[in-house]
Image (tube, rainbow, N blue to C red; front, side, top):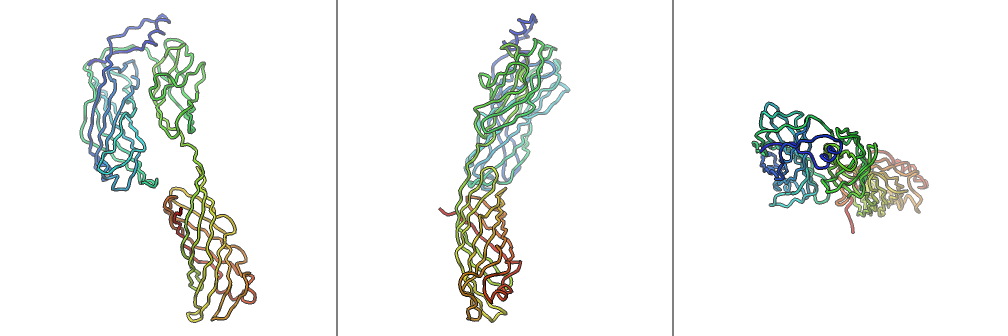
Length: 459
């Protein structure tokens, strides 16, 4: 196999028009070269990896100082056992296939980066993805015609981001997989190419929305003449996705899909013909589609404990939340049922009371990385209070003179499954309890009280 200099028809046409003589040394084949590699990963989550790569490496272009990047189609296979045992339902798999390029004393290392998202995990079946677009690695800056050129697949790096069925993430798995090398391609001799250079444009910035990418790129120079514009190709499309005219170095791709990876290349034009090689491909992901706010409905159960008298208060009710898209902020309407408290003073004197817990406004907080916070201002009311069997209050005017500030947190909370919030709070002094006000405040007011509230999804 011999590496030859290939100059595209468009570039050749520009060269002829410019009066430049172009010599093409040989004819490249369109045949594709394939390689398969199996590597052991030694991880209980990912025990091994299989990768397939196919590309028209015959079409490699040797133009000093650097060869362009060629599209590669790849496939991957991962065992499901470890991921299924860990509770994974879907995975995003990034598989970087190491490639060693050798030309005499020159040895360079690069990767072919395969990426597959939202792959289902089914116990007993390999996790597979095919027809994944990637590109050949960077070539050495210089090559020698005196030595063969070889491409060998070496180690493979695997990164797995998995999710459970409820959408919660599992810890990321990153592992290097080893086990030898596999020859992908070899050229026994190289024929020289032009010492003239034309350098493709490099993408320097990308601003994304859910359906667009705004690119900025570097200026390209060409031996064929002045640049008249640029064309942007997406995912090796047959026609450019964007063509610009004039010296501008920015443009916007529109009509894209949300939360999707795209490979983008930029190439300078002279007239309607490519005037340079393509710039290095970059993979860019659009933003997720804007989400609507989510309504969540829970049954609330739990307990509160009044520290001074050691009394437990049973809690029950409902919580109806609106989770704001994109921020994780929530606004919750909490309704707690009336309850009762029974305790003994000094271990011998019984005291009973009916208790109401009434939030004075919405409960607010946020959900981030599985942690839920909730802050509420709660008016605490007492009625039908008895002490040693004798009534201390009448009516329903006895309550805290200001709302109690209750702050609760849950370290592991998911909207689909709910969770348990806990916290401490202080009970303010009481008012409206008649002559019993000082006595009751002495019994219940103070800090160090605790609350635990479990939210369970309801229909």
